[in-house]
Length: 115
Image 1 (spheres, rainbow, N blue to C red):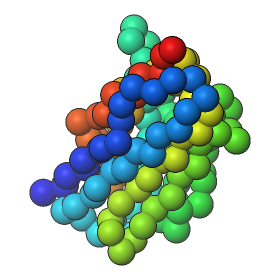
Image 2: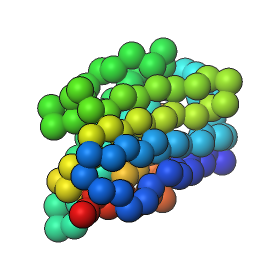
Image 3: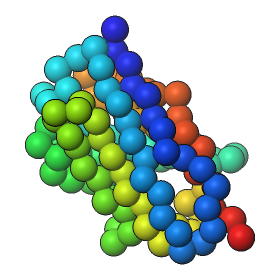
Image 4: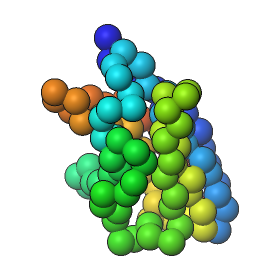
């Protein structure tokens, strides 16, 4: 079955970096678009970045442009989100998403940016 497992979240101070990983299984990873979303407390889930099958960015939120970089590793069936210069407003649960015949989601990983 389709599984998406996120890892790499944590507590960091403003200006620091984190790398999130999403391990995917149960489907032909290299043939589907993937995405990272996030949901802050009291807010709706929002798109962070959407990438195509080759890892090209389809859409990225303006608030993370220049700070976040996404990549996909077709050999390890993984998608990574490198987050630099983190800000308190980046605090959220980050979710990996796969656009298959329907949307699939991971369980999420918490990112907290606080001094």
